[in-house]
Length: 82
Image (cartoon, rainbow, N blue to C red; front, side, top):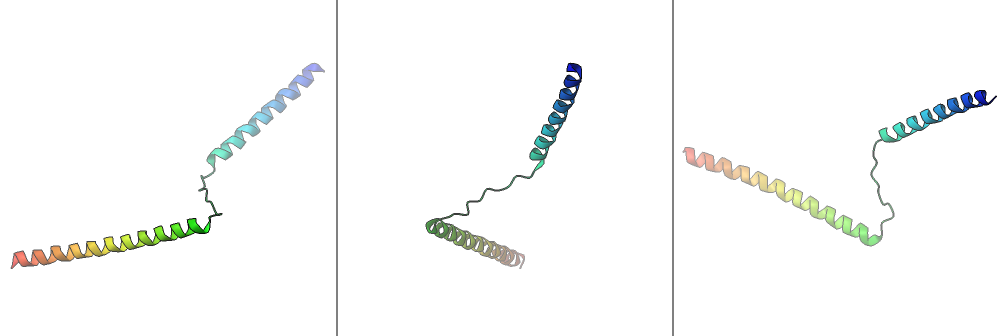
């Protein structure tokens, strides 16, 4: 009876080990998720809104500056070829 008990306990142990391996493998293959703090205070929301507005203004200034630089290059090219 002890041999039968050992045989079943070994198969149970192998089964549990297999479950643990697949569980760990499944956890490792899950995609990482961003942790977002949804409980923001009014002050933090105001700061984020202000930073967002500043970023959009800077992006627009960058685009305008690039267009102006291209216009200058075109005019200089035309002026030098005349």
